[in-house]
Length: 78
Image 1 (cartoon, one colour):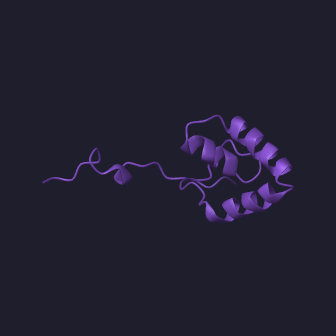
Image 2 (image 1 turned 135 degrees about the vertical axis):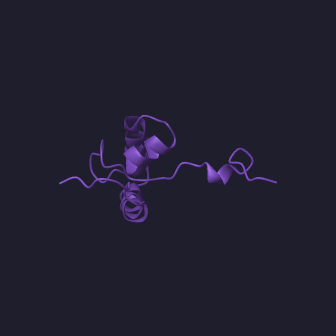
């Protein structure tokens, strides 16, 4: 039996990267928005509200995501 990406969903999954284009700070929200096909502005607004509600915990989570999510492979910006 031949392996097909239609039958094995994890072979065709999109990878989560921090993009080199369209980032404001570290590219975390832009990467999450791109991964889930959502406007990064929506992700940024939700992240800001959750950060305010959680008394700043969102900043720690953002920093961890910045460190853990790899940068998009390709040409490096100067």
